[in-house]
Image (cartoon, rainbow over all chains, first blue to last red):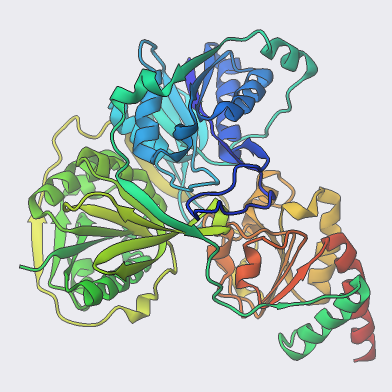
Amino acid sequence: MKILVCIKQVPQKDAPLKLNEAGTWIREDVSYEVNEPDAYALEEALRQKEKHGGEVVVVTAGPARSQQVLREALAKGADRAIHLIDDSFASLDAVSTARAIAAAMEGETFDMVFTGLQSDDYGFAQTGVLLAEILGWPHATIIIGIEKTETGVRLKRELEAGHYQLMDMPLPCLLTIQSGINKLRYATLIGIKQAKNKPVKQLTLADVRSKLGANMQKIERLYVPVKQKKTEMLQGTPGEIAKKLVDKLRNEARVI
Amino acid sequence: MADTILVLVEQQPAAAGKLNRVSFETIAAAQAIAKDTGWQVEIAVLGSGIGDIALELATRKAAKVYAIESPHLAVYTSDAYVHVLKEFLSEKQPKLVLMPHTYQVRDFAPSLALSLGKTVIPDAVGYKYENGKLLFTRQMFQGKFAADVSFTDDGNLWMATFQNAAFRGDMAEAGTAPIETINVTVPDGVVRVQAHEIFKEAKQAVDLSQSEVIVAVGRGIKEQKHLAMAEELAQLLGGDIAASRPICDSGWLPLDRQIGSSGQTIAPKLYIGLGISGAIQHIVGMKGSRTIVAINKDAEAPIFEIADVGVVANLFDIVPPLIEEIKKVKAVA
């Protein structure tokens, strides 16, 4: 099985984010990490390879800094990486991002493509599905189990409110992976060492520009959300806060 | 003729023949936009044997209800939905297509839009109509920011999805809409997957929707052994412990303790969030709680946007004295 895993670098979960001066995007001077669902997608690809053999390739579209997530993936066991490298890749809409990845796949034959189910920055939950449409492949979303069968794969799809559905799908196919499908591994020291010698192919914006269209949606402005509720912030020493909280629980929430 | 907003509603995935209640929220959203823009609202539903559902939809204020019928639509597949809807929308050319941001819509809507050369603005929480321009407001960076997003073209077939509870379903205006049944077929070979029955994993051990007090833990709890502290707090308050998705993903608590879009929806008297940042997926499951208390060391955490009482602090500094204080008060009472 040859599997391509799409991963993205996003701001760290608890990184304090600030708006840029124009109010169009965040200031870039924050810490980044791999988008969490993508880490599960990578782990699942590595497990499939361990069971069935093959190759795991990782791809990301982003500025030079995003090479970090490729290096981490290689250290965990991915065989090689493709970096669509340009600052402007971070501001493409989901369709253009999917087109860029499709262009990066040209000349290769993959059995499956995995993506995380959505990114923690834009939260579009679209790039994977769009990539499947561009490739003309069947797809399934929010996958929580994958078993290889004679004819393809048997998938376990998560539905809402605790429901699931099994589904048979031929190859090649694209799957968006739900967090929690597996347990993430850590990179080993040997893995980190070996990653240094694994190939990272770079593709520039110029290499794929002819495949991209214009963005079809535009962020007019980005802002701190208007608060819907008045929040009373409690301050003081931990002991004082505990007393104030108990007072609230008794007199307002009335649970004591 | 006025431009049309087409609302695409859905049945409950696990209970065909029943409308997903979120459908009425999307209808309410469309009616609100229609008031501002002067456009008209139409509703469409897909399935097999959906006459009763169409009748239910026809009790809302709309210019028309389309019942798109086919035995091939009895079980949802992205392939069949995209095939049928591409044809339907190409012909009808509504200005705007609105859908609820459900798992099902997430599965087919991006393909559908792209097959028509269009795009979907997903997971909107509201809209703005400014100087004749329609903007959709959506959350970014896990709710830390909001963005107003526009379509860059003037054509038809704009598409957007609305987040669960962005509008109130009971605000969908009543009326009488004519029903048009459209029978469609899906040729062999279109559907490339075989979808099997929908099931529930195991009987849910706890029904958190009945709890009066929920103490929910998130990533900030750091280690599994610290759950005991949250458990003690929940017990003292006569409540139950629950968690955000990452905690259940790590196996620290069973899946039936998970609150949010893929877990349970709760509305207790009191919700206490310990080290929960408030990702959208969690918030949709608990924002109906009567009193929301949030303890988080990150002052920017989105949970504070919806909290009634907030404490910016390390939960390990606050929870132990809080437990002691509750014990003291209970001993006196």
